[in-house]
Image 1 (cartoon, rainbow, N blue to C red):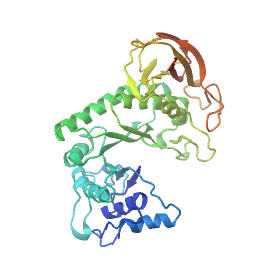
Image 2: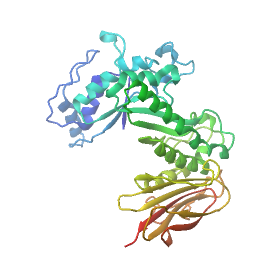
Image 3: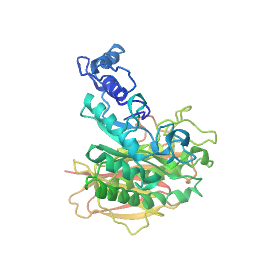
Image 4: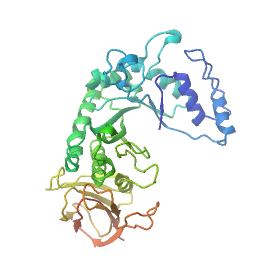
Length: 401
């Protein structure tokens, strides 16, 4: 995914699509932009790429127009901007963001012009528009984006950070994922149903993590085991409630002055944060969600997710939010035959821990080859299992011949 600047021009963005995705023999004219600059042809930009060592296209299929534009600074974005805005943009108005404003060389182009110019270079790309979790928030920003985007909205971008102040405790964050995503998706889908003729564009959560501003995370919870359990549940709840795409922010951010870090990997030491392993486990999950039911509280005790892969392998992910081992019997309703079971497990001594284990190994190799899944045995209709304290466990149930 690539984010183009809303402060640029649509033809500049089109030239970037040509650089990554274009062919050197493509004579399609990009042309002169509203500021008088000639962006030449698709082939010109593809040749620049080829001359620097990449003769074949390196296609980027997902694009965004702008970043958190609704959060513009008031001195440049107009009266709808918050006094504490952070983005250097020309509008905080959702309609203007979509349609643009001004004329001639002073024109600021909107999302629809960007999308049209970019897809003229490569019609296979998808271009996302900046939204907000609840469409009526931020001066009705999301509703205006949905109304003006209509059928030309390839996907609707949401950023979500659960806390805008220091969480009260590590325990307090674990209840959050189950409390937020139903409301976010209900309000977003309701807006699409009311304003876009019922067409629901894919929702892409292109940033998520624990706190909105790293300066407030003085307890460095993002670097601790609690955030691994939180991120695992965030992914699960987004999947359950229909989010199409989710990107954790971010891979390697850099440590803040207070010692916290958004990143999955420490820039300086290359050490992996606990939350890294939450995404490892989800990457091993099946590709179709199944219904799951439990008498235990999913906010305070044990949250569960179940899935099935194309080859019939079943996945059960369990997040134990307590400091005690949990004895459980998992019943496979509707399953037949015998399954060979193995388990991948992330575990910590406490929610505040920065020292964790993955499959019993404290610092596994980069490819995790020295931390294989543990063999559990063969089961048919039910499985007895003990989930470790403060753990994320992924059970793999492979059908046996």
